Amino acid sequence: MHHMAQAARPRRNLFETWMNRLARTDQIERLQALSDADLARKGLRREDIVRHVFRDRTAF
Image (tube, rainbow, N blue to C red; front, side):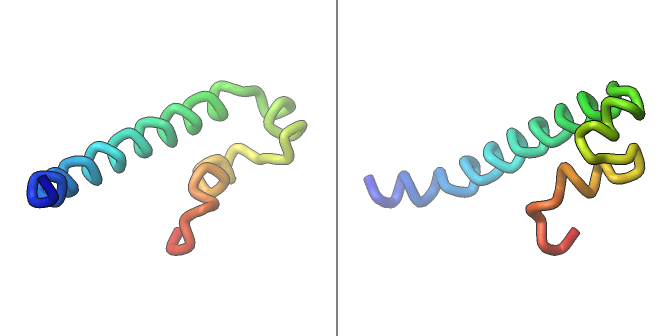
């Protein structure tokens, strides 16, 4: 059984990466739909949306 779990790991990692990307894309779209005033209330500027969404990525 251990071998089967090990063999499934790459697919699981790919699925998790895909789901994470979808979640980030959704967050970017929701923030882009806000007005500049709404973004300002959140402490954001439109040009900072992508950086904000990927702020947990050290290489970004």
